[in-house]
Length: 323
Image (cartoon, rainbow, N blue to C red; front, top):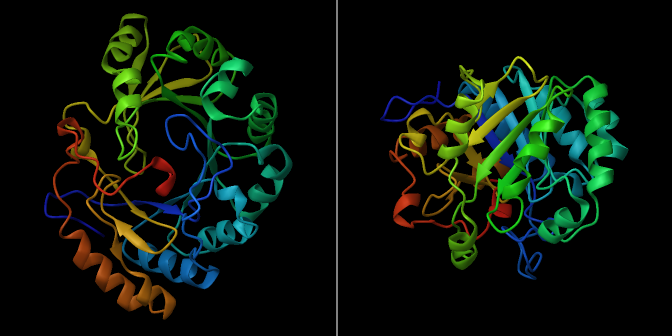
């Protein structure tokens, strides 16, 4: 089992398969992808080596991210590689949802267990203002199909933005009354290129947590392979609420995940100072060597991310690693 010097064990890998995204979310890629966005993504063979190594090291959950992962035509093959690797119990994906309606059946047959869909507003005009795309209805239809497809978990992700969707919380909660989804509310994080936007739009999650507890919501105990959200449930709601609060006290104490970029760099933290290149062993198809280099590098993981001090590391924007 992968373990760092602080006793944290890593059951969960977030694997980015592309930095490209077709949305222009104002908190991530307001101008779209730059012309110098890397194109040399990991090949299927390299993905196979990577997943085999992490499974050998105790990883049981893989989340496929982007950019937007469904832009890769071989996504179903990647899902199947992950699902077919001994030791991998859960294969999840985070997507902007534009392709979900047409392809959720294909992804499910390949082995997809869970899906997170970005949904930053339930108002079509606000959704378009945030994402640069008029796709809300198509995305919600894809969510409904995902719920009927047999995937074990459907989650919706909303980045809270003071000047945009902060007033929609009641609408989000109403959506949960009769749908078995988890709605994740994520604090906006400062990255290398969004300082002014961050200062204007950051919304702290702690007051929302207090409101939930005062309104009869109960906090749920996290599974060891769960992500960073604090989750809450209520007897009057079919769905649940999750809060991801990276600026909260001890957020990094329960870290259980590592990240690998679409170019084969290991990121010990979303806001690490740099990615650590492990691609040579992946290209060689050498599982043993990949295990050895990952174990050595994980030993250097530091205690926390430093976001509260304004440190954003090498993360220019969230599409680099899918958050």
